[in-house]
Image: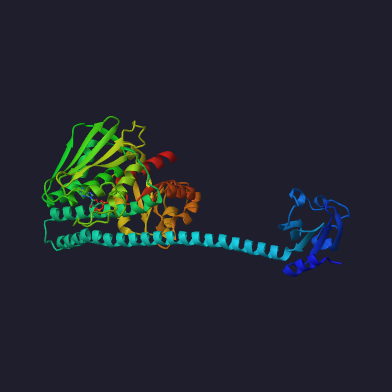
Length: 496
Ligand code: ADP
C-alpha cells in the first residue's frame, strides 16, 4: 500500500506522467518500492541495497533533510525529478517522470536556438544585401554621372570637329588653321575615350606596361604640341623646363597620358598666369612636375582628390572627377607614384609624377631600317569591317615595304588568302556578325602564318585569352603606327 505521505505528494505532482517510489530505512537501504522501474528504463532495485548504489547521483547527498534533484537523466530515454522525503523513521525517494516535458522543452529550445541562428543569418544576409544594394546604387549613380559628364565632355570637341570640317568643305576657312583645330579636338576626344576605356580597365585591374626609349626633348615637345594650343587659347603661358638631356626608358604612352591629364587639369583650373612642365632627375627617379598658378585645391580635399568622382564643388570647369584617379592608377601600373606636392589658392598647384629609373633592358624595338628590310617583299592581309580603319592602316604601312591586301569580311579574306601568298594577317576581333577567333585556327592550319589581333580592350588577362585562342600578338586600338610596324616586324622575324 502506498503510504499516505506519498499519495498526497503524488496528487500535488500531477503533472508527472509516471512515478516510481522507493522506501528506505534509516540507513538508506531499500525496504520496498512501488511502481515499475522499467518505465524509467532501469531495473528494479534489490532489497536492502544502499540507495546510493542504486542511483549514484545520490552519493553526494547528505540526506539530513528533504531535497530534490530536478531533471535527472536516469536512462537514455528517461528524465525524472527525484524527490527525497523524510518521514519519522522512513525515508522515501520518489521519481516522477518528466521525460515528455523535458524532451518537449529541449525540442523547443533547439527550435528557438535554430530560429535564433536563422534570424541572425537572415539579419546578416539582409545587411549584406543592403550593402550590395547601396554599392550597386552608388555604382549606377557613378556610371550615370560618368555618362552625363562624358556626353558633355565629348560633345564639345565633336561640335568643333563637325563645325570646322564643314567650314573646310565649303572653303570658308584657311585649311591649315581648320585642320589644326580639328586635329587638336580629335586628340582631345581620343584622350577622353582612352580615359574612359582605361577607367574600365583599371577597375578590372589590367593595364599593360610597355617600356620604350625616348629622348626627354621629344617627349616634352610632343606633350607641348597638345597642351600649348588650349593653354594659349586661355591666355596662359605654357613653359617647359628641363636641364638633363636624358634618353628615358619608360612606358611612353602611359607617361604621356598621365602628364597630359595633369596638364589638361592645370589649363582647366587656371584662369591666369602660367602652367609649366618640369623634368629633373632626383636620385634614382625621374621627376616630372606639373605646376600651375591656378585656383588651387582646398586643404580638406587634398587627401581625397585622387579618389574617383572627387571634385571641388565650387569649381566652374566641367569634368567627371576620374582623371586624377585614372592617372594615379596608371602611375602605379607603371611602377611610378603620383602625388600632389603642393596646392594653395595663393600659389596654385604642383603635381609630381615620380618614375623609378629602369636599367635599360634590351630593347625589343627594331630600328626603322631593320623593319624595312624585314617587311620588304612581304604581304599583309588586313581584315576589318570599317573601311576607314582599313584605309588608315594601309596609310600607316605605306612606307613599310609591305604589300597590303584588305578585306571587309571573312569571306573576302578567305578568297584573298586562296589567290595570294600572304605572310601575315592583321584582324579586328568583331568582323560583321562574326568573331575572328572562329576562323583563326582554320586559317592558320591552311596557311601557317602569324595573325595579329587588334582590340580596344587589351589587358594582361584578355591578351592571355587571345593568345590561347591562337592569335600570335595583340595590338591595342586606337592603332599606334610605330607599334603597328614593330609588332608586324617582330612577328615576321619570328616566323622566318
Ligand atoms: P575632373 O575631370 O573633374 O577634372 P580630375 O580627377 O582630373 O577630374 O580632378 C578632380 C578634381 O581635382 C577636379 O574636379 C578639380 O576640382 C581638382 N583639380 C585637379 N587638378 C587641379 C588643379 N591643377 N588645380 C586645381 N584643382 C584641380
